[in-house]
Image (cartoon, rainbow over all chains, first blue to last red; front, side, top):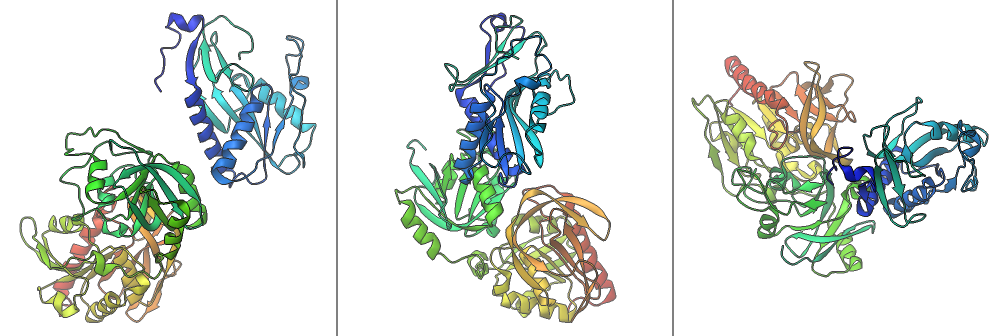
Length: 197
Length: 378
């Protein structure tokens, strides 16, 4: 898994550069599942909450791998954070998926928020606010496929699939076959193309 | 490894992993244990303490330095089976004389690769070391599991005779000869005699069935109890020998299995650890100096001795000199009223860090002290 030349490569500015292809994403998700199992005493009392859009299929994949490794069924839910975002006036407030909690809710359980890209930390903060309206989990952790840096809030992930050091003008786009044509993580230059973070 | 055979690993509780054959193609059964060592697989494979064990390497990439003619710790590979996530397709090292896969095949070690060793290791950590089988000869999982369940467990296994030297041999001191040590071979590693030789000690390595008179007949100034495989609860012969060594006041040093034997001779019990200590980065506290050393471990059993204060035994006061900082397990015993001490881990390293090499100095000093006091040779 070689690191591509990032911003210097002209190709990275247009179609972007593939940072993780499908087999690498699979391996990263496997490792995240192992790490979750090891940090949660076998995923005991644990709920995975995906943040739409791509956090949801990611959470389902993690649950699938955890089941494959240890035979444990981890409940998966959806947490819509749109209403708690701090940029509601700045961008269209369309929520792709409504909040959908697994049976048993969140009270007293270990919640793991799952998202595709961690950048400013504002989505994670919104998720914490959204959670506060739903109950009182025993603890909340954060799992992300990609951490690209540039935090604007004191937020940090407990599980990181891949750290991708980026420039601010670059964007990271995660595609997952559940919602996109293929599995890949792509780094684009300074031309935003919608859906990136 | 031109042809790839499918291989299976079946644990006694039925969990099954499917991968590819590595090393010899066939079938094997043993106790599944994991080692966290990132280096030194050749030393691991040739360590007699791994006799009858299926060794899982947690390090994901193994075989990248091949094998060489220098790193064997005994005359053969001892592991019952070998489990590797991702074998190196080609050795690349200036000392390498061959590929690990070829040597495993030549030594008849049945292995498996390409399985999720992280999941397997966690399974063993949480449920304890257990019997396992590896097969690459087309055996189905159900019949392999039957043979796994029929195999003798490690608890209660008396293996010293299976790994001990058939005939006595001598490793001469380097430079000036100062002392003679009789080593009871219960599965000794070559680096033990090397570390002794470096201190002017000539070591006579004697079969596990030797008597104390046989040991002393070589003119020994001290007795060494070697590391080795098996359940110390079965080692009645060596325990009786160690008891007599204590009674006569002959200087005694022991490593690993040898430490458990001294423990039993002093009246302590031994017990089987959940999944054992195997690796080269285990932190141990030397309570006599307060120093922490990073050490090489390979033990599935331990001595049950009180760690809070010195215990009174038939041979006077005995203290726990070393403890493992991960789990508080007894890692060393020191007799305060007799010239005897042992450690549960491996100061000879091979593989591993050399932090604990000073223990061989302590042994030399013990022999020296005993000699001047005239309390040594019977």
